[in-house]
Length: 180
Ligand code: IMP
Ligand code: MG
Image 1: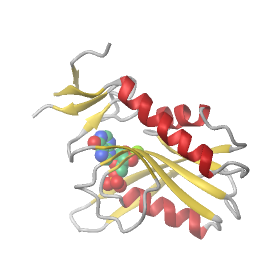
Image 2: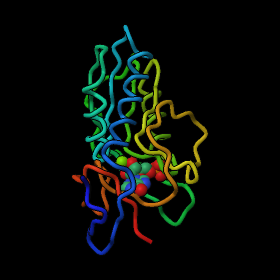
Image 3: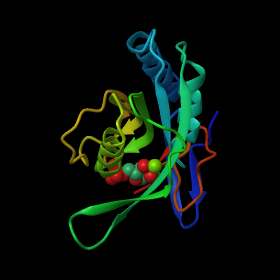
């Protein structure tokens, strides 16, 4: 059982998605991927830091041959309306002619995923499939398809299960929403 409230730095978060709800979303995505990628050997690209927990859970349920690689990016939003996604750690794998599955923890505005998808395409990927555990449809500004979405959530800040608030909260097994 997860505690109903957690305190991280100066903020309080309330339990929003249980471990069971998350596990069931992970299994449905893995089942779909197992159908879609049977007989192929995709490269799974896990986006650090947030997606390392979800990425590992998905990975263990895949039944087709697959490889895994990691990339770390961070997004900056200045006062201007356009954002910038900075590569903090490059992908240590060649994506040329590969079927790539990008795994993210959360898609908010979609800026990060859009950047990753274009990066993979420019690097010569044969196909790029996008997967995220959480999706905030009300915040999304992208015009691309998210093939695998675990759970749609309202436009509220969440932590846990890999997601952090200023570095903390990633180790919480459930997902918590900022208390208002
Ligand atoms: P986007 O580029 O606006 O889609 O934001 C995606 C990135 O912002 C994610 O990879 C997270 O690192 C971070 N992020 C967005 N929403 C949240 C949240 O509610 N909690 C924690 N991190 C978030
Ligand atoms: Mg992230």
